[in-house]
Image 1: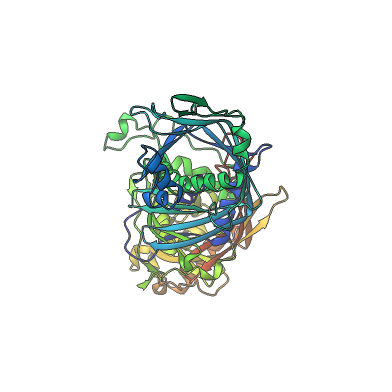
Image 2: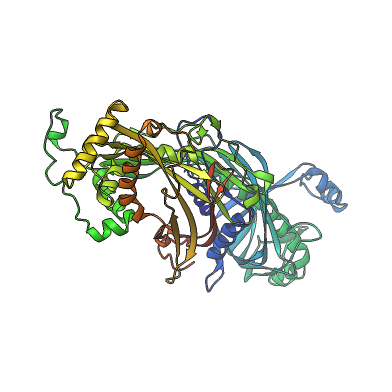
Length: 598
């Protein structure tokens, strides 16, 4: 069942939304087959065959009266003896621990999905086992059973020792139906049925051997003269009837698998739950006493800015941003939870859901519309991306909700001041929208307070003060406008053998006027042309050196977590509404103690 836990752990989800899917992870048919085959490989890729143990137990069997009386010798036995065979006949099979070992044919694995609903589905699995070897130190046939233990009673019993049964000829085909259900809090797996080909014309043959047979003392009494029968050759006589015994034992095993084994598995699984909501990240900086005080106070002791070199500021704003995060964000938590399960075309499993993000005590707020408009989020359709194992779709509203939270911490302003400081320039918000199916558009809603612009000479002082005077009736000389920065992401293979993503950042100053395709608030149209030209020149001089460049990020350490290794194949925009990441599964190290060995 570890594969199913992994599948649930791979679902990104939680929150309070009521629109179309905000987040979705689709595990396609070939991806599910990979997971199942890797699970099988892990459980069989050892020098010796894998072995399971069926615990010691006693099983009740009943031969119906109709079957007994259909034998023509039974009426004769009833007449010449005091046995009553005119009723159902009960007997018991008492076993020691039974060791079952064998390999499986990974290529024979088949899968089918059925009975899908928003809270789960049924999964049918079929696999061939070329050969099975069953060993038991003792197997006894009993007339009755002990009332207080799993042992034979005081009645007649016969037993075999050192029993070994091996399948030959055809493989055993095992078909199981599992049911996965969730109530919104936890998921549970139950076994609905297990079937085999151990009965019928396609059943394998059995090779049976045992060391000795122990039967009750058998004696015939005639006219008071008792004659004990010789049972020393009973073993050889029993072995002469291998075919008959094989059919009976196969029937017993088939009944055990279909009935007792299913019950045993469900008893084991009844208390096994997989959470469908997780807290996947949490950070809490210890609160100092003076942080409870409301009056202005100095920076808390120990809060020291990390030194960032001028080279880093000029050349890598992404690294600058990463360096600021831990200092700006004092507390954070990320929670995911399952919203809905669907099985498109009864071949794939799609997990839809929501995410809850909290930064510095402020929660995530997600809209249900696109592109700074009232355009609704479309229903997600990932059908055209089934050629990859996994599709991960993140909607534009989720991205923008997260950007709003990050902006509330002051992080973007911190990065601006560290990478491209311009006195009087501040960031009101950052949004992300999609342009076609290949590029993202980061919309930086900037603000320039002309009264705070830096003057490095008398001429610039006059220039700035004239600008303030000219714009005095335009929002008190505070200019606000969007800056649209187009970003084109694409994956690449690294020389180290890992995977990276390149972010090509285009300049927003390639136009005569800064575009405003998403209709964000601006008072630039009210500006005088001379002031507008001066402000744009100031921004261009500070920001343009960081654009028309490619920034690289090594994804390797993010793509091999908890023993699961992914290979990103493409990143694109789906339906102009979702950021879509397509990946293939490379490997799953099910052995967490030794992740380099399956």
